[in-house]
Amino acid sequence: MSIKAENNYYLPAGLPMPVSESDGLSEPFWSGLKMERLRVQHCSHCQTWQFGPEWLCHHCHRFDPEWEEIEPKGTIYSWERVWHPSHDALKSHGPYIAVLVELPHAGNVRVVGNLLGDPMQEVIIGADVVGIFEHHLDAESPYTLLQWQYKAD
Amino acid sequence: MKSNTLRGQVAVAGIGESNYYRHGQSPDSEFKLALQAILAACDDAGIQPAQIDGFASFSDDRNDASRLAAALGIRQLRSATMQWGGGGGGCCAAVANGAAAIHAGMAECVVVFRSLAQGQFGRFGRTTGINTISGEKAYLMPYGVLAPPQRFAMRVRRFMHEHGVRQEAMRAIAMASYHHAQANPRAVMHGKPLDEERYDHSRWVVEPFHLYDCCMENDGAAAIILVSQERARDFKNKPVYVLGAAAGSGFRAGADPHNSPHYASANFGTLAPNLFRMAGIQPQDVGVVQSYENFTGGVLMTLVEHGLVDAQDINQFFTLDNLIAPSGKLPLNTSGGNLAECYVHGMELVIEAVRQVRGTSTSQAEKSDIALVAGGPMVTPASNLLLGSESVL
Image 1: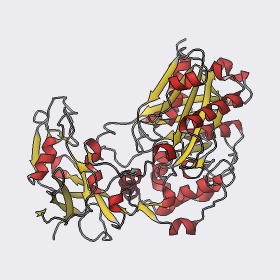
Image 2 (image 1 turned 180 degrees about the horizontal axis):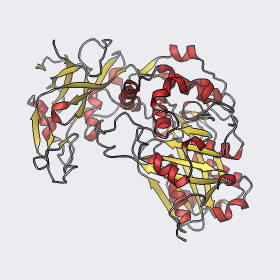
Image 3 (image 1 turned 30 degrees about the vertical axis):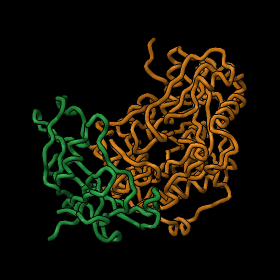
């Protein structure tokens, strides 16, 4: 699933735009999201999962651990409801929810995103969520975010 | 005999601070504030600034040691150390690094300082003006996880979830700081008391942090002067000895974004045993605690990880009565700290620990021969420090 319509973003435009580092370390992650693929590192030598990315596997020290596509699903590990606008782009926006999502099928690595829906909804640690790709095609440097919503029963 | 310990080897001879201001209110530049704090510490010790031969700081302090040495007319600069990491994670490590330089014979008189003029250089709580972002922040900022409150709230929420912590525990920490600030004329929040109702009705910055759970941002500088134990009795004030110090973090604490295996943690799990081992004391020997409050929730974690409170007892233990001097079970942040005295990245907490051991705090604890300082919670590297009087050695 994805959000494609312009201006249908969870947060207003104007927040910092993600780009890969100059050394390209996270390029497979960000280019993957654009293709609606969630990729994290999975060392083919020792099977260790790793995120954020690094140039070597922290377990067996093999360089350039492989990127593996995984299903964008997980469980809410923690959350926060943000009220104070720390950025001008958020000034008249109101509260929003950020969640930390654990990915049990990928060694319990975690990713941060927003929980789509009512910003005042109850957030339940341990609840199942599914990923939604939010494409920012109109950005100066187009990118895609991975957002989350409660899994339908 | 070779001794691999700082215990009793180095003493704090002097303490000093600039005036403390709300952010943007200092009439003086950050560098001038640093000089004011250093000269105040020299005056407190009764030493000539020219005797300084080392500087130690942290958090990428902008006030370069060589410029300070030149400005102060120091004859010989022998040690200049900077602890890696941001925020208050290095406030104790900077003391340890300065003490280690002295103990190793690489310097004789080291100033440990931090100067921070947020009016001059901008605040941590504002993130406007960034166009693109890469690395760790790229996984956070586009989702509105921008400034420190948002970067730490999920850790605290997870900690609350794991241990059934109620909001009132964090409220007690904020109220203790404000309570102590009312006795401290240096404190920015002196004359501005906080009660339960005011806390409860204050705005959310980010749940679970009310406004009063978050540190201030200020203009101010603080400094201490370290000398070897051989010289400790040569100065005006009662010497305060370094009993122990530790710095760092545990396994993959720095795995970003938010991938530290021990996530709901202040990162003192590996440090606290090292600290108490070096000091040769037990947690129950600590009389008074200065625990860095970037956010109140980090203080909960810090005290648990130092063995001062059992995680299961948090809701019962964290009450205002238990946390205030003189006779609470564990007087906490007795100057007002980052919440209510001045946000100098924890150097003000180190100074307050010295005052407690001297017996000169504006909120003196009954039991104050051993004072704990913990810097950083939830950042890496974190650091901690035990100070004590001569009677403890």
